[in-house]
Length: 247
Ligand SMILES: Cc1cc2nc3c(=O)[nH]c(=O)nc-3n(C[C@H](O)[C@H](O)[C@H](O)COP(=O)(O)OP(=O)(O)OC[C@H]3O[C@@H](n4cnc5c(N)ncnc54)[C@H](O)[C@@H]3O)c2cc1C
Figure 1 (tube, rainbow, N blue to C red):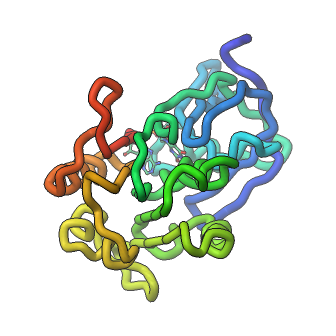
Figure 2 (cartoon, rainbow, N blue to C red):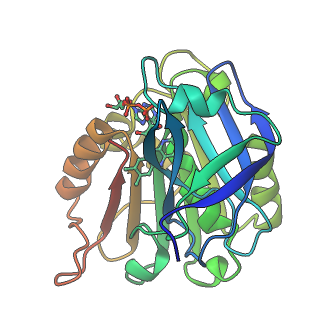
């Protein structure tokens, strides 16, 4: 199989002036919910490629990616310029370890995301056998402004479909929003606000955590969770903290 296949944009969603989703028709190898692939565009004869997580469940017809146009970014502003019918190069070989296969058993699965990193968690929550794996799933989704919260309708449907098993904790850092916590994930964990909002404790004997997105958030969140007795989940020494940095 060649290194790239040609995909075609079949739909785009604009969540705000910088945040968007692309649905792409492309023939890639099967993937596991939570994984990512690479997208690329040619620029002046050179290929610019970056990693993007699948938002769609593995069994969905089209691939879906949530992206933000990074100011001065090399690829993401050009992805934002794509419209329906445009071509895009897609790596047919998905990869990544932010998957439930990598996570040990536990009672609750906490998923902490900043910004576009909510994508892989939506893929996991939309995948077929996800709900049998843990008693409760808590999606903690942190953004700067309310307008940066994407897929709220999908998340609401998940909550309605799994009222006992699913809890949603939105966090907005730069404005006060009704129904959302205000601040950063590490501080809101340290002062128990997130645990109170989810009405669940965090402890090594019961909690598994997935953390994805901004590397500063990940570093600080890991430190807080380690202070609660959780340990990084490594293949040779299983623990409770599994993570994926976006840069
Ligand atoms: C495993 C993995 C999965 C990823 N999945 C996604 C995804 O699903 N959606 C997505 O938008 N990006 C994702 N990224 C980031 C993506 O690969 C690019 O880095 C991003 O789109 C910026 O590329 P660029 O060429 O425009 O910017 P560059 O010129 O490469 O600039 C990179 C800088 O942009 C900023 N940045 C990068 N990604 C983000 C982001 N997501 N949100 C805010 N700031 C960012 C950081 O400051 C970083 O230093 C993922 C990265 C990894 C490693």
